[in-house]
Length: 114
Length: 113
Image 1: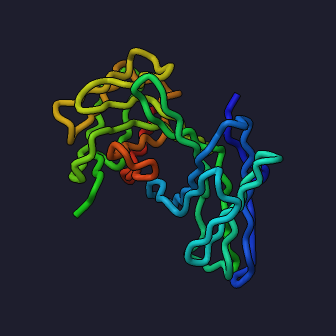
Image 2 (image 1 turned 30 degrees about the horizontal axis):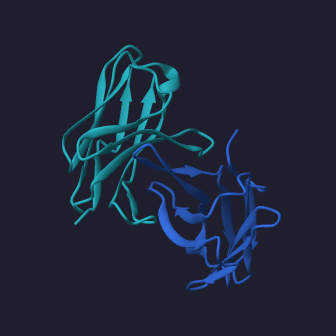
C-alpha cells in the first residue's frame, strides 16, 4: 500500500480560523516530508518541508509538525484566507537505484468559507 | 517566463486515437517526470528521465511512451487511447541535489470519449 496517506479528504473552515491538515505515514525510516498546495487548474506547489531531526518547522502562516512516534505529520495554516482554498498533499521523496521520486498522499481539499 | 510548460492544456479525443503531450522546462534541471492525477486527485508517478535517460518506469501500460529529445524536454505519447486514460497529466522537473526542488507544470487535462 501507500506509505503516505491522509485522515481527512475534505476540510471546510471559516475565513480567519486556523486549519489543520493531517497526514500519516507508514515507514518509520522516512526522514523527509514535503507539503504541497494545488490550486484549481494548477500543478502542485511547494509550501514547506521538514526533516525527521525536527519536530516543528514554521513558515509564513504555515507550520508543519512531525510526530515520529505515531508516524504523523500535520500542516497548520493560521488565519486561513480564501486564497488558501486548494488541495493539500503531503509527499515523501524516495531514492534508490539512481532514481528519485515523490510519493504523494491522497490529498485534502481545503475550502475556506468567507 | 513559465518554468515548466505543458501543451496542450486540454485535450479531448476519441478512444483508439494516438496523442502526444509536450513538456519543456527552462530551469536547467537534470531530471524530468510525468505524473498522472486521477479524478480523486491522487498523484502517481509514471516516468522519470535524468539527462535524457529513462530512470523510472512505473507500472504503466506500454501504450504510454515517453521521449526525451534533450534534457529540457520530456514528451509523452499515448497510443490507442482508452477511457481510463482520462486524467490530468503533470510534468515536473527537479535539479539534482535539491530534495524539495520540484517544479510542476500546470497540467494537461486529457478526456477520452
